[in-house]
Structures are given as C-alpha cells and as structure tokens.
Length: 331
Image: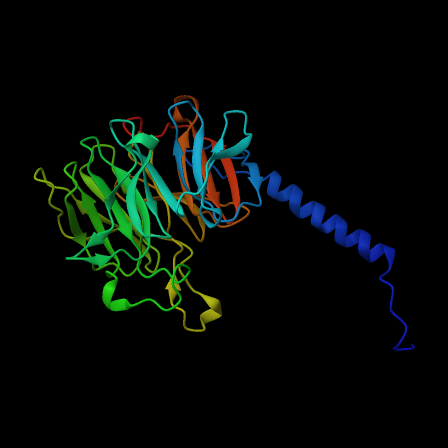
C-alpha cells in the first residue's frame, strides 16, 4: 500500500457507523422505565423533549401549566410548554441555576456569576435576598433552593466557583454550607459540615430538610423543630452509583447526587450518577429510573403534577408517573 495515497473508508463501514448512531439515537428516544410500585409502570416511555442545551438545571412547575428550567451556561431560563415545545422565557439571568416560587408568587433564584440569591420576577420586585454571609464573606456558588409555606428560603452554597474566577481569593469566600433566609431577609447558616451540598428539598409536611451531598454516598436529612432549628444531621438514604471520578485519578469520589423532588406520598426522588433514584419517606430504596444521560435535576409538573420532568447533561425529558408530586409548593 502506498502510504501517500489516502485510504477511502468502505461504504459499508460508513453505513454501519450511521446505522449505529441511528440505533443509539432511537434507543435514547425510546428509553423506558422499570416497574417501581406507586411510581411508574414497567415500560413507561421516557420522552426526550429536546437536547443540545448548554447547562441544564433547576426545573420547576410554573403557574400556567408549563415548566421552567435553567440553561446555566447561556444564562437563560427555558420554558417547556404543555405540548413539549421549548422557548426562551428569560435571558441575561446572571447564571441562574435553580428556581422556586415564594408564597406571594415571586420567582426566586440562586445566581452563580455574581453569586447571590434573589427575586428575579416580577421585574418590578426584583431584589437581592442574600449575597454576603458569615459577617461579610461572599457566597461561592449558590446551587439549589426551596421555599417553604411561610416564605423561608432554604438554599445550598457548594463552594468556590472556578468558572466565575479561576484564581479566587479564598479568604473572602464562605465555605460550602446550607442557609436559610427569613421573610425579613435575615440570613442564617444552618450547616457547614457537608463536603459539597447540592440539591435541597423539604418533606411535604415541612418537618424534614433533605440535602444532597454530591461528594458523599448518602442523601442527608435534618429534622426541623417547631422553632425552626435543625436537629442533628443523619444519613437518610444510601445512593447507588457512588464512584471515584476521573477513573480514580484523585479528584474525589462522587454519587452525582444533585436535584431532589418529593411526591404527594412523601417519596424522595434523587437525580444521581445512577439515574433517578426513588426512596420511601423512611429512606428505603424503591428503584432507579435510568436515563440515556446523567440527570441533574427534576420536578413534578403538568396536569395534576403527574408528570416527572428531568433535566441534565444538556437534555430534558418527561415521564408520566402514578403518584402526583406534592401540591403544596411549586416543587
């Protein structure tokens, strides 16, 4: 063979590669669920709404029946209409990562470029709720939030954001922690002993606070007393898919534990390396919904909140479920 003559790829090889890609795409489109009692029937189709987004986080049910989620890397909020079509709902969002509705209808968000928590809609009521903590330290990377029925905003800060500043002044940035903002805008640190706090959620009765520790093997839980104080941290549910990242080269172990959601029966749904993991209110594993790509966050929405919307790795999916999401909050 003359090394100076280009070798042509046989047409059969090209066709085989194309067929393989088409097969993979078809598999991604036709992914189905296992049977999880009370959650999904076996063979329920996982519908791909759309992919190709740059950063997918923070889905939430909107009052008009649509779903909002954040396209973090493009600093946008995307709307999914009931028919599955998507459009840009809000632009130039300061890197919004997660969303929640306050009892008065304000849309509250954690923002990552200039790290803060604040109201982003309605525009006439936009304001910062928290940007400085611990006596003047900057937030690192606010990650997720949930607002209770009284208007208290619980949020996580997962630490330094290398995408915003490759050489941060660590003496001016707060360590990873969980915080609560009162309706009077007082910011209180609730916990700072979690390696990488990520997703955060409340039980339907708002007596338990759940926190996803991405660097850990368990979803954590805290009892909330009548006076609002937290009880001791406990390991609520053990996650599948806990592994060393980068093939064990030292970047640390991770479960990929990210967004959290609860249904009307108090089951906890966790986006993780393994897929969507579902647990009873006592932390017992019920099953895993595997998706074509790693999920990052999820929320119940649609008619009667009986559709589970999942986003992650640039994609958005939806899955019809047997039990509705909790109706007392948007998420």
